[in-house]
Image 1 (cartoon, rainbow, N blue to C red):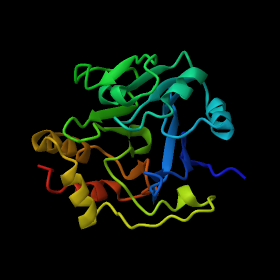
Image 2 (image 1 turned 90 degrees about the horizontal axis):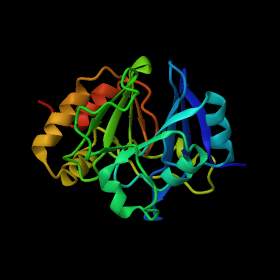
Image 3 (image 1 turned 135 degrees about the vertical axis):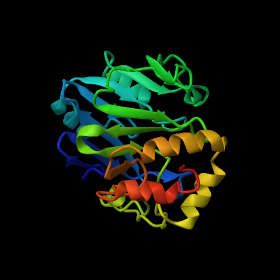
Length: 236
């Protein structure tokens, strides 16, 4: 049996959850998210392997038009997604490029390089906010129709129970958004406090209830309050 859990979180928003251990030790879980856009096509935050069952479900949703790299470290599977969907726009973070093993991959857009007001074509449905003051240079996304915040390392919700639900290994650890340890992690990974205040406040003012993190369980409700609890030191 596959260790990938695929489910529709809310209409037209699908998640692909599987085990992933940071440094091969700490079980944080991994997750990709695919959204069937209202105007047609599919937007994918690609953060897990494009295995057979993942590709089958994505192909059922429609033509992939956007492949998204969420930050400087979630780039391992962008190449295989782009190879499978060569006509899709590949949009990522400039800071990821030095760490990528395949230097031939060409991006159609890069947060950190492009002007801050750049539109990539999906903004009528999905907002984005680039966190230049965060060490991993993450981008937060808001799927407006479902009021879902989608992000990689800006917020964790551990243990990663769903992501390890089909694994022989166990999920452990307790890193919740409103915990002091998580706030300490955010403080330690902040490289520009002024920029963090700007961007954390921007996201706090978005209209969302659900949070879909790459690491840990989905927060199905009260997500905006969880975000505000984590970033209370930065929110104006």
